[in-house]
Amino acid sequence: MNALSFANVSASYGARPILSGITATFKAGAVTAIVGPNGAGKTTLFRVALGVLPSGGAIRILDNDLKNWSREALARTIAYLPQGADAHWPISAKRLVALGRLPHRKPFAPPNAADEVAVAEALNRCEAHELAGRAIDELSAGERARVLLARALATGAPILMADEPAAHLDPAHQLGLMRLLKDEARRGTAVLVTLHDLALASRYCDEVLVLERGTVAAQGIPERALNDETLARVFGVRALHVREKDGSAVIAWAPV
Image (cartoon, rainbow, N blue to C red; front, side, top):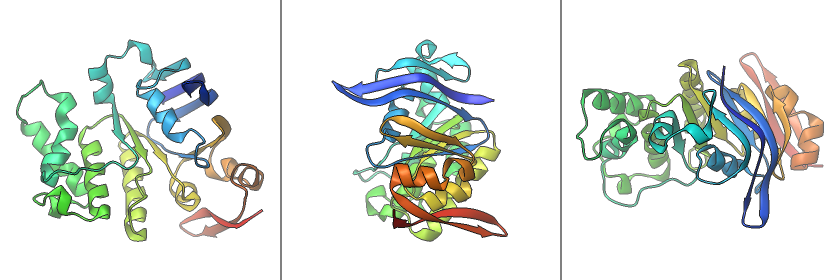
């Protein structure tokens, strides 16, 4: 089932077009990487799906037009981890993760038992349970990244959008993050993740959407979307295609 779809979607910042004629689908139960050079429109794609940037064309969420969604219902349906997300005040990690439950509560209502369970599960899944009582401003960049992802997971939304969540993680935690996103997809969640690392995208994602100057250059399984022709044209690189018993990956190797 398609959890999210775009049909001929365009968007701009003022007079500057960013997306043009985007048609793409994102499936429930799958991890889809969104890749492309800087300025290709990856973050903008998320912003139009969230309804915070006006757009032309049609966007459907769980088979219902975006225009029919209330802000409250949309907040329960799409969990969003923005690029460069951070916190700069001395709140505990647990309390920060609990903010992910706000869409499920009435204003000023205290957390209930379901909220407590969701927060604990999210911290455990992100290997951040030991950080629960620590102040967020005392954590390393990598630790904060794990806690912020836990906040998004705590929402329990059927769609998860994560914008460059691997950016501040060391290699071991990057691999752990991608396995976590795969596990989230097995729960039935549609996971959309923007990545610059083509190796992570090709190894762990079910599909890859390649953006080029605000248009769709390719979408499909990694071997098809990240073929040599697309890599050379869109990224200007020659790649190695590594195959092992437990998977395969595309590694950017040299400029073309």
